[in-house]
Length: 532
Image (tube, rainbow, N blue to C red; front, side, top):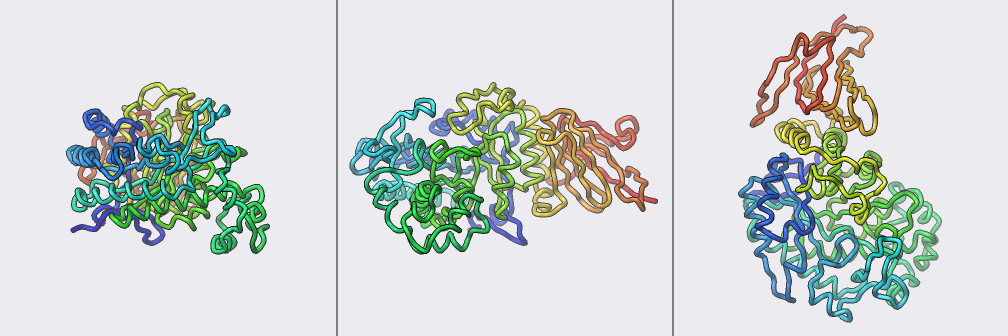
């Protein structure tokens, strides 16, 4: 039997391995309800193939997996795996158990009805159900992260799911990753206010956790670092962490809950497991975004409490895409993006993720609707900034498909340069032009539209592959002692079965003064020569 999918860090580079071979997930996450129907999914698989995707991220919901307590229905899981194989694609399953977007709507009926056994959180003292006026009048009654009975039931169901995946897929490895829950945390309050929560909050912070936090301040965000450095030897959560206490408390118990679920699943089949997060906006209070979810702010809490989690995945719906990518890679960990909008920057961000951040996964959400008009108000329901002007225009399908197919063809080349300075990218969304410097050569990209993007891969000395769109390219020497530059080869083409297939040899009018304009996506092979 081949080794199951795994995440490996070798020579400082993180890669997702399938049968021992690395892969970049050029993925798409489907709408929440799409994967509840095998017949509906047939069209989605076809759309995914047309877009050049190699993986779909698909929800598996607790309510459909365990409709009655102890009775599991695996027909949907098995059917989705069969469909993926038939279409030559991979799957990342998303477990919608206790949480989905900080709510509990995917819990089974038998869980929802038994409010005594499966307790709800108290957003206000004594209230299990509130209307969140500041958040679109959301009717809100989430399950409590402190209820061990719910945690055990969720973990049992998740373990059954992983056992079934092992049974049907341990040889073929169609399922590569599994997300444990979805955007965990608590809205409308920074912590649970039940009697149980109060007792725990005003008890001493567990000593092992307090010690861990004191010895891991180097990676913390400033406000948490300050709170930890100012904490005493012992005390309750408020005494130890002041203004950060309630969110750290929620993170501690949410992460322990999720880890229990993940560990139960890994005991059955240890696929790489991720958690995704609804991001916090600058200055927002915990509860405006889900308090306790695995955002960077509370990452050290999650590291301590959830050792079974392999990947921390930001759902990026905020405009500062590059800043968020920097924040989620600064600890030396892989970038894994399971959700982002299908607006007109989706294609250039794809190039940026692969080329600049050497991402493990890039996956726009609602992939089956790419090319359709976006609804900013609706997207705000899951953390998007409705005022983001990027949401005014959707990504055109043809451009996205062309870029993904070109990336897919050169995957081995890309992976061979992951973690090195010989793979880079830039986007017109964030800068009007960018100069790449490699091997004494300057490759200048000036973007003709903000949606433009450019990826540069150095093959060997002064030989490059360039994937670009909406980009004006100019190549020149950046060596004063070797100021001359000549073009030895300028070709347009693609990779097929790992072999470069030239479409056109470019020269003359197409390459004037060592420049080239790429409006539609194009992959170029450029061979240069510098001289005195």
